[in-house]
Image 1 (tube, one colour):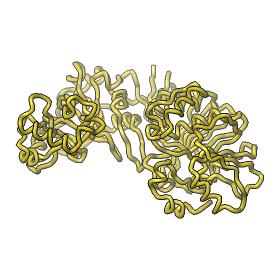
Image 2 (cartoon, one colour):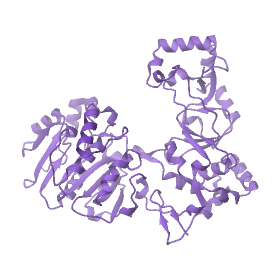
Image 3 (cartoon, helix red, strand yellow):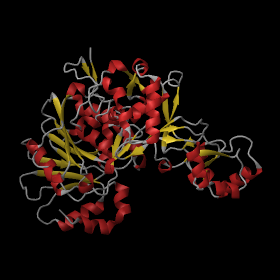
Image 4 (cartoon, helix red, strand yellow):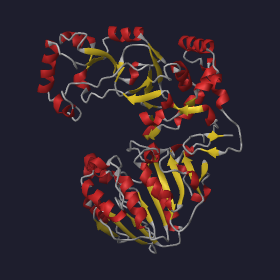
Length: 523
């Protein structure tokens, strides 16, 4: 394979990013190519040739063909590969229809579909040829995979590298539906060593193995910790083997890679939205303008009616409780804890600041230009519970006892009439080991072990029912809160409250695939 570094230095990072180019390591490419060719059919097609990672230069018997939109990459490969000629179509794969293939192997370009220059034409072609409408938040990799699945002739195999996030997102439903439609999905392999494999990507990756000529009753989910462990397919041990009937396109598949199981009696739970809802924090569209420190606001002559206290960064809260004293300390430290919010009758100083913002072009930002007036921020009330959007090694859940609003670094929970009574119960549950294990399923995993919650993800998490909460005495709740205030590491003060939710029944009436630990409904 040609020297990747030489090519990268030649074209520059901007060129590679514009085309979503990421090099496939030899160990990964060999594994995928060997698995596909084990179909017994000696032909191979690569829809995104790049520098030819999957090209078997030494395998003269393999009939190889490929597509590649980047003429620079094609020329570079031809100049550096003299062992064997290769048939490469210089074309945009998503615009080229009409061919069929027995075996397909691919590391597709990865970028948001919104940034794809031919997306309007591609969308029309997908509806014409496949009768499918691509979701607005999909990516080019998903579009490549959907097209490739439609081009298999039914005799061979397909191996694809995909961003792991599609397994847990809404736009991934269409892809997952196609993967299981014919029961041909054999395995999904998550590369937990993604920084060793793809050091430049910002999302975790996985490998899909699809066997068009075979009908599988189960799908193997593998988790690879080291690239050296990616040997032959037969040597891999799945973390989970899941029945195809349990794989629902609209549900999250991400945590089938976990081998551990926690059985929860769902008769004792309700969705979190039974008690209220988390919603995203305030999106300003221009934090440079809207987020201020006390000294900055004072220098501008802005008064209390022009600004509101606000948590603007995740790092501003480190402990599970955030109160007025914490907020006051942030004010005293002159941190950026004010949100410019002149939503009513703006003071003369506020009007002057708004005019300054317009001179700086803040009114032309994507969000601000769609607001009337542009400087009007979203109307919110302080949320009593805050949930960190991004996390590594466990999410943040905060009891907010201050009058501070929050930006998008946190989701804010607003209780309904039921939730008002059980706010402290919910807080303790989400803080507990059991709650964290159940909620962890709904996280979306990105590169470098970065997890993310979307509001709808957490709102659907199973939480204890009112009947279960009623079994916990008020005195016990008070005691647990006091213990945690005194020592945030003292989880033993309340963890046992939710132990009885676990159910060791071995013959569940129904097993829910929407769980990291296979939530079980027992009779």
